[in-house]
Amino acid sequence: MRLHYPTFELYVLKSFIDTGSSDLWVISDKCKGNCATDLSLYPTADFKPTNLHAELRYGDSFTGTHAIGPIGQDIVSIAGLSLPDQYFSAINDTDTNVLSTGAAGIFGLGFPINSAIWATVFSEVVGTSDKRSLWKRGSRGTFPNVHALYDAVRGSGHSQYRRQADDAEGTSAILKLYASLGPFLSRLVGIEELELPSFTITLQRNYIDIGGNAGVLTVGGLPERVKNNSLTWVPLRAYSEQEGGLAAPVESPSEVYPMVWEVFVDAVYLDDHLLSESKLGPSTISPSALLDTGNSLIRGPEDVINEMHSLLGITSDGSGSAFGCSTPHNLTFVIGGTVFPVDPRDFISQAYYDSVEYCVPNIAKTDAPVIGEGYLYSWNLGDPFLKR
Image 1 (tube, one colour):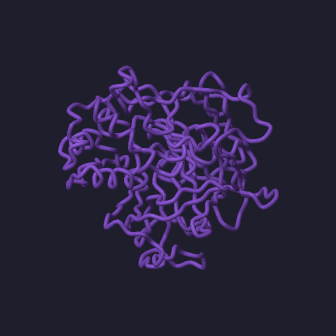
Image 2 (spheres, one colour; image 1 turned 30 degrees about the vertical axis):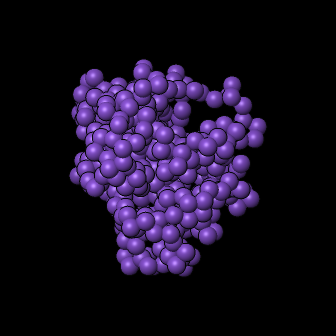
Image 3 (tube, rainbow, N blue to C red; image 1 turned 120 degrees about the horizontal axis):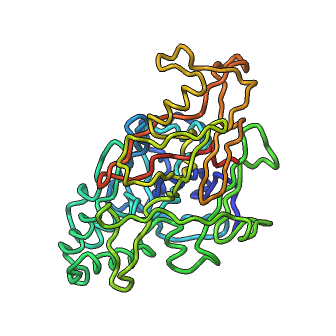
């Protein structure tokens, strides 16, 4: 099943595809915030409400944004794949720039454990009243409070869930509800609707327009002409229970689960110069990166970004923040022993609207990871990386 990026259909609304988040939401026709647009908005007259509320937080301490609105249900369809009674949020308050992208919402492709909508609905289904504690807030955004999920299961008003006495049994209860309460793709996988439990995304550059596509989303298999043996397969970072992840379930006592699309990074080079490893986080955390279509930049540790600025001739006071566009710069990430270069054209943006003589790098600093206080990745590889 294939779909032009970044569109999915919910009353024929366009939504921005985001691998860095897990929630589906669209701006409703009752939005009173940052909602000025000529786009069609979701008609709340057709919304099946649940009396539940979503407060979604994105980004880090440098670029935090929000989307807030009620949770409800409707039919959601992608490329002929359709699910009734899909939970999502009809947003009526947001400061995101989604509308400026030509989209009316965000379609998160992350894991269910990171879905605020799923966690809220889950706590309602198991019968607990304390929903706010299901999330921890920190400098790197929100992080699921797995222990609160287990407490919700143990404190459930329903005996079928309350019988789960320990964390392992709690995990089993959580996983069983993914197929009925989880995000759209997780439900498709849970009911075995897909040929393969996978998706792929191909992005195009802004100045290339072939067939009107900004890219392609492939659901349930690989794109045409792409073979398994042409890919670099790498493990995702798995989070232990001590690191904030799920405990191993009863049926699989050695299991450790990933939480986000996070891969380990062997090395980073700028113009063939091996960049230093960051000293800002604990040395016990191996360098890793979030693969994030919802990020328009490449974000990294502040000390490494400063090293890159120095190599590029950028000064901390901003007086030398731009450089000549005619000189290409090569940023390269080594992942799974394979070299992944960022195209020099994607590494830069115009420094000034009316000039193509000076450019700035598409890089920015992000918060350092802290064990037990959120995700452990030190890099966020957004569209400049993924377009190559």
